[in-house]
Amino acid sequence: MAPGETGYRRRILIEPAPGCVVAELEDDYHRMVVTLEHADGIVRRVTSEMKRRPWTSCPGAMAMLERTFTGVALADVVRRGDKTINCTHLYDLALFAAAHAGEGAAIAYDIVVTDAVEGQRSARLSRNGVPLLEWRLEGDLFLAPPALAGTRMAALGEWIARQDRATAEAGRILRWAAILALGRAMAIPAGLSATVFPSGACYTFQPETAQGATRLAGADVDFSRPGAEPLGDRAAAFG
Image (cartoon, rainbow, N blue to C red; front, side, top):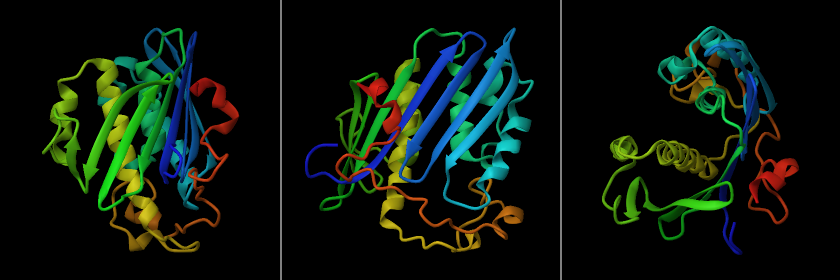
């Protein structure tokens, strides 16, 4: 993050190995890991870990993830569906792991979405230390780059569909980060019931789960602070 900037940060590290892919993320609200084991093009085992999570109910989503993807062909993981009954972050990590199964090199994404200044935000993504995307936003409206100017966030899928595989993945990651970054403007006190939020967006906000879910104390980390960085113990992977 540039000097004087404040904002949301997220890092994602995808590490393929023979028969296995580990995908991990950390941001202001989460640190989570998915390990996907595969053989003969099939997901044989899915395990996950929540090192930091915002709601008391989140750990229940680990069993849901296992049920969702075990036995699914790697090629079909992206089309599996059922995202909103899962933890969306674990679900995305499983998709990244499947997409990079069989590769030989790690992939490191570093994302920054600045807090709004006079209504405008910057959203930037680097892959393996190389800047790849930079967007300028006013609310959900793209101001830059020129190819996206005038586009609303809700219509970004059309642009993503026209990109090559690497750019499309980066675009999906940065779009989700730009949405999540809006949470920095929300004060969510510890102990708040999940029922105050709209239902159905993810595992925690399913009606049957939200009834018993409350916000955890100390769940949030501000990575704008000097010396703080997501996945700080893996910092060498991010250049």
